[in-house]
Each structure stands twice: as structure tokens, then as C-alpha cells.
Image 1: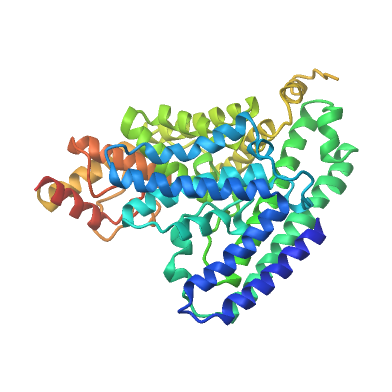
Image 2: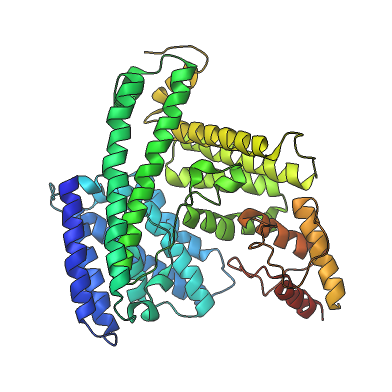
Length: 393
Length: 81
């Protein structure tokens, strides 16, 4: 994994040098550097993935053009999810007869599936921004889709991050150096701390690495709860590490990708959690799903539950993520209802309420996340039953 | 609608969203940056505002993010003039 990471760093280093050798006026030359580097990376993973990503970008551009021509059909941009739905039914890269056995890198093991989920949302944002600005060049759509550091795990940014202004900036050596530092931080989080949690810490706590727990099961509620905390800590460290790598790589090209995390482990309520966790997704949910649904239904609770259920299924069409969506939506709805009803705060000192809020929120999101990420319905049932002391082999 | 009337409608929508508001709203208050609304609240607030006005505010689309009270008053006054 680290070897693949080293290749990514060296490629980014070389690409950024070529990028900055081109004068600021040669924006399309700089764009070509980004596109060629990204294209090569994704091709190495799987040529079919590159083909599907380019085709989806083309679909987005066409949907933009059609919606611009026929604004009365405001739902048309949502058709961008069609490839994602098709992929959920049958993995698209297996349908296309590209040569088998392409040299997949370990770093990009899940790149195809995750990448598609992320670039689908990026493309929707790009279409909406394009309609607002009345301009969406295909080359910007393509750069947004393929930009390789952000391809597997976001953040979810629209085409504006890769427009003419962004690519014509002067070199900034300070940001370039900071970018290398940020990539380093991301690597330490994703590979070293993440690896330590997955193996050493899990082994010390459960007598087995995390991956083995799904096979052997959990002894009881205490171990199952502890596993939830450890699994969520791993998810956060790993996910935020990859986001750091993406943002750092962006800085090396003087590009600003959206920050995705603000210390989510200290969130003191579920609302506060969504102001700290996966911010680009949170922004997407709020702007493009929750608000239109609220306008349509007029019901906050219903809109929250439906929105988060759909977001859960966007992550993965599974029972675990269905529970995750309903759980998060319901918790947010309950919080909104409680606030709107002007219920008095619980009569405890502020610091106690805040600490209690952090513990309850962390417990809730850890459990929801662990339920969502169980590898199968059978393992999910085994995990849930362990909370009532039933051990299923 | 006058600016004072618009401010009253905004205050009402804010109370419907978060339960209560301490003191009067000033035009330079930013409802999000000053912590009165979070991102989800802000959408509920805009919905309540449109509900109170009885019509959709064209200036506010999905990506609207200027929650300065003065800017909202401008929009409400313009929409009702």
C-alpha cells in the first residue's frame, strides 16, 4: 500500500513541476497536465473505470445542456445517478470487455465503487453550478470528475474548483510545501495510525484484528460497543487521511478543495456532528436534497428521514445503510423538533450537559456507522444480537 | 412591506425554526456565522420564511448562503414590493 502511495506522491511531485513550468496564460496546457496524470492513474487501476468516468462526465455535460434548453424539467440533472444505479445492479466495469488483469494497485482497491459514488455527486453539483452561471465547459467537467487525488473519496466539489481562474493562479511555493506536509499527515493517518488501529489496537482489545471480528463475532454487548468505537475511530482516521492527501495534492497545484472534517469526535449533538463530519456531503445533502424535499413536503422530520435514507443507500444499497439513514434522519428530526418546541435544557451544569452530549453523540454515530459497514446481513444480525447476549456462530 | 415588517417576518420564521431568539435581530447579524442557525436549520428557516410570505423567494435557490439579516430583509422587501 505504501509503495502505491509513494508512486502517487512522486507522480504528484512531477506533475506539479510540469504544471508550474507552464505560464499562467496556458490554462489549457495546465489542465492537460492534470487530465493526463489523472487519466494514467485511473487507467492503471482499471481502463474500464476510466471509460465509465469519462462517459458519465459526458452525460453530465449533456444533462446540463438539455436542462439549460428546457429549464421547466428541473429534475433532469438527477439523471446523473443512472450510471450509479446501473452499477449497483451490475458492476459496469465487468460489462465492458477491456483486457482482464490490468495492474490494479492495492491503494485503489475500492476506487471504482467509491469513486463513482463521489464523482456522481460532484457532477450533480457541477451541473447545478453551471446552470446558475450559464456556463459549463466540458473540459472543466472532465477535470472535476477525474482529478486523481480526489477520485476515490472526494471531497465533493463542483467544476468551479477547476475553472479558468483556479488554473491560472501563479505558483505558490509556500502552499506547495504545505501540500507535501498535508499529504504526509494524511499518509500517517491513513496508513500508520489506521493500520495500528486495525491490527495492534484491535488485537489488544479483542484478541484479533478488526477484519477477523466479522468472522468470529462478538462476545457480548460490552465488546460489541467497544468494537463500534474502534471501528468508527478507524473510519475517521482513514477517511480523513485520504481527504488530507487529496487536499494536500490540490495545494501542490494551488487548487482549493473543500475541507471535509472539523474534529467530529467531539461533536456534542447529532446536528453538531453533521457540521463536523464529511462537510462537503453535508453541504450537498442540505442544499440539493433536504431543502427541495422540505419545499415539496413541508414536513421537516419526513424530509430529514427520507433525505438521509437516500444518502444511506447512496453509500451502499444494503440493510445496514438503510438503518444508518433512518437512524441519522430520525435523530436529526428529533433534535429539530425538540428545539422548535422550546423545551427547557436538562437542569445540569453546562459542562456536564456538553460532556454527556459528546458521549451520547459519539456512541450513536459509532453504532450507526458499525451497523452500516457490516459486510453482510448475516454479520449485521450477528452484531445486533450480540447486544442482547446472543452469540451466533 | 417595510424593512421593519420584513424584519418581523424574519424573526417569526427564526423563532419557528429554533424556538426562541434572545433580543432583537440587528441587520448586521449573520444567522449562520453568529451561531443562531446551523446548516440544516438554515434550510428550515428559509422554508418557514417562504411559508410566512406565502410565496417562493426567487432570489433564494438551493445554494443560497447569505444569512446576513440585512440581506434577507432586502430580499423580503423586494419580493413583496
